[in-house]
Length: 309
Figure (tube, rainbow, N blue to C red):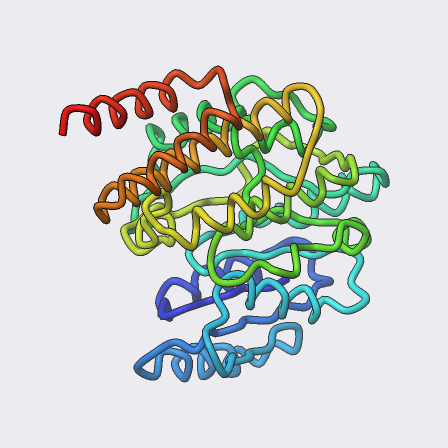
């Protein structure tokens, strides 16, 4: 188990306590502080060391390497473990979660990972039925039954698999290469993990029971990074997706996402006042997905605006 944390000493305690409450007792865990400011890492260190639990140790990173830095460190720390899981410091596991995951993966040796449905929480930890139902619908979970699923197809379609709480077969991650060597920073670590598993045709095991909790709050990376308006995020996603080619529905979805990312680049260039670069980005968007009405409409608007000046 790897629990990456950054400046959330009050929340990471809850994550760790949910791990210690597991009915499966045979695990080892690393709580890795990502160079938190203001002494927050010292608070977490004191808490972890004060537990006196030999299964759980604390590490403080010397520099903030983002999700990629933490992920690479924690995966390396997994060593000879058969299974590997990252739990974000603001999320929770229900007591039977790890036992259910291990039992499912033991029974399905061809499955690369185990994932279950989450319940969603407000910032204060209160469950939100409305957010939970919306998550299940939006991520293609509402009607899916227990059993195997294709990792690439489902993730490209709806972001089916999250990084937090998913239990991976370590051997499958090694076989996939884990993440691309040229990717760094905070995002899109999750996309990278699951596209690489998709590259090797991996399948996962899904349990529709709600066995873990995801906390949604203003401090999440998805809210602080400004994803589609962040040049680094958009550029890294393009680098991941443009070097891959699939078939069927995953390929159509790959091209649609690439077109959307080029549209995002075009908007950023427009915001900077660089219309020529925006036109080039929109040309790439239309080439990636010739059936994208949004890309063609944006390209036409920019052409008409330019022609009228």
